[in-house]
Image (cartoon, rainbow, N blue to C red; front, side, top):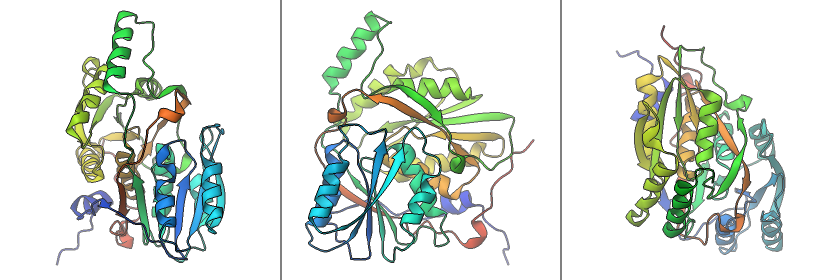
Length: 359
């Protein structure tokens, strides 16, 4: 008889992971809840409007951002939901003081008897991780929980805009390359996403380079990791591969010494989850692992699932200071997707098992 007990990462690595499912029509029931965030992108209302078009009642948990920006579309979401006769509960998420939000969300959803759909389309990446970790911490785990996601039609900047900005920076090093956001408010560590593992001799940072190069720079300066793994994002459309190349140039990845370079899809979360699990299997016994989720939304979903089950990693997040052009962060709405999370329900004995770093 085999009496060995798998650790959470071993169980998760062996699991047949559900795929992201394309959805034409969201059909919610009266006991279901849609969690939606008042961001400033066109796709912020896409799933809500799609679900309303089925003409069936459901409930909405609307997350308002603070500090509030005039471009945030919370008032529009509220008007659409209430105008359709939906029950709406409102909750505030402070980007600059986000600790404890997961428990606030669970309190709001404590009476939920149906499904919980988390629309990550316009959410802060730290918020995505906090919500997924909170949902996974319930006694029922991810039972009846789903991730809903709307792709954008276009992701500024255009290739021409990016090349021009890069040339300006190369000719005048005093010019900062600012595509999406400006500066970093703080490298945030919230208590609920801190590591439960003992200290180790080495700190390994796993980060996702983006067009916002100052995020990686700020995180490296704050953490001062002794080891670094960088996961580059490959867009699903080959025509957008230039973005991956531009991100490498903007962050000067070729000049970062001894960095381990990896690559995963920006859409298929399974690639990122498997990559994180491999890094943990290779280095978790010797390194204290920190993850900075600044990749795509679905790469961030992978981080959230990973952290919900593997407790001895720490999340660090370079919170953006401000956004350059909020109305051009992304444009339009593309395909809609649904990801069931029910499969990520390990047996009870896995819940609090984590590795201790070796000497």
